[in-house]
Image 1 (spheres, rainbow over the protein chains, first blue to last red):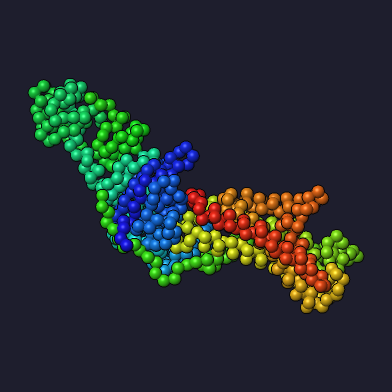
Image 2: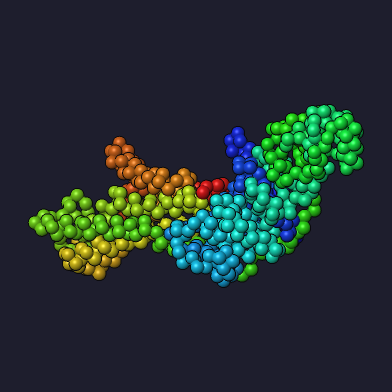
Length: 320
Length: 287
C-alpha cells in the first residue's frame, strides 16, 4: 500500500461552542519537513492529537500512511513517532528506564536502539539519573530519543523548542535537520517563524482552527515579489502620483514611507514621474515580505478569514 | 496537490501485548514509594493488634468478631480476626489507593499519551493496568493475612483452631482454611478494585477516584447497618467480606462463599466493562 505519510480531510474538533479545529485539510508528502504554523490556541496541538488518534475528530478523517488510527488502532502508528505538547515521562524512573519502558511497548527491536538514541540526543551521560531531576531541555531531548526508538518514517513534533534556551533551541533544530536529512518525514508544529523558515519546505498556517495557507514555503515567500518600499521628499504627493500611475497598485503608508506593488517597468516609470514632479527619491527598494510578516497578515486579519498571502493587513493604512 | 507517497511501514517481529504492559505496570508500582506505604499499612495493623494483645496480658479478645475469643488460644485466630477488621476500611482503602490512581495519575501527568502513542492497543493498556492493580490488591491481602499469621503464631503458638461450628481442626488444616478464606476475601476486594478503576478512568482525577471508591465502601456498610434495608444486605459488596466465614465451618457452608463470588463478579464485571469502554473511546488531552 502506498499513501502519503499524512493525509487529513475535513478535520473538525469542537469543545462546546468553541471550534478548536475547523475543517482542516493537510497533506504531508514523503520527505517533507512540514511546518504547522499558528499562534497559541490556533488548534495545532488539537490537530496533532487527532492525527495520533489521541482524540476523536467530530468530523473528518486523519490517515497516517493511509491508515486511520481510530479504525486500525496502534497498527496505524507503525513507523510513526513524536510527541504532543511537552513529552512526558515517569519522574521516578531513570531516563534509560523510561526508554526501556516505551521500547518494550514499541516492540520490533526498539530496546536495541536505546543506546544509539541516547547518543543521538546526547543524554547518555545522564541516562542513569531520574527524569524528575532533568531540565526541560533534557526532557525534550529524551522525548526525541523516545521517538527515535520507533525507527520512525514520520515524526510529529509539537513545538519541540518551546522552553529551551538559545543553545538548546539551536541544538534541537540541528537535530531535526539531521533527522530530516536522513529521509524522515517531519511535521513540525511551531509558532516560531525562524524555526519554520530554517527547517521547513512546506507549511500550513492555521488561524482560529482554520488553515489559511497550505503549500510551499518558497512559493509563499515569493508570492510577495513585486512589492516595493518608497521613501521620498514628499510622501503625500508621491502617494497621490503613484495611485494614478498605470501598473502601480496597493499603495499605502508603511515603514516611514510608502509601500506599493507593481512590475519593474511600472516602478521605473513611477520614479521618472516623481522626478518630473520635483519629488526627490530617497529610496526605492524591492521588498519581499518575511514569513513573520505574512504570518501576522494571515493570523491577525479579519474574522472572515479572507486575508491571504500578499493581501494587505487591516492594520496598515491603505491609500486606495 | 499530489503528495509523495511511501510504502506504509509495518512493525516486524513480536508485537507487545497485555503481558508487556502488565510487566511494566509492576515495574512502575515497584518504583513508587506509595506502593510500599500500602504494604506497610497492611502489615502494621496485625502488628498493632498482636502488640496490643500482648500488652493486655490479663484481657481476653474482641468478643464481637468471629474468632475474637480464640486469639489467645492460637495464633491462627489472629489473621481471621484481622480479616474481619480489615473489611471496614483498611483493605478497601489500600485497594482504592492503587486502583483509583493507576489510570487517573497517568492522565493527569500526561504519561498516558506517551504510552498510547506506542504499539499497544488501548484495551491492552487497560487490561495490563487492571491486572497490575489486582496483583497489588492480592499482595496487600497476602501481607495482611501473612503478617497476622506469623506474628500470631509467634505470640500465641501455632496451635489447632476451633472453627465457627465448634469443630477443632489441626494446625495444617487451619492454615489451609486461612488460605482459602483469603482467596474468598479477595473476591470483594476485586469488586472494589474494579469500582476504583472505573472511577479512576471516568473522573481522570486520582484523589476523586480514591475517595470515591472508599466512600462507596463506607456507604455500603451504612446501608448494611440500616435494618429497614436488610433485603439489600446479601447483594452489598461490603457484605461479601464476611463470605469467607462459611469456609470456617464443618461442614463447609458454601452458600455465602458462592454468593460472595457472584455478587463480587456482578460488581466487578460491569465496572470493568464500563471502564474499558470509556478508556478505549475517550479523548486523551491531559498533561
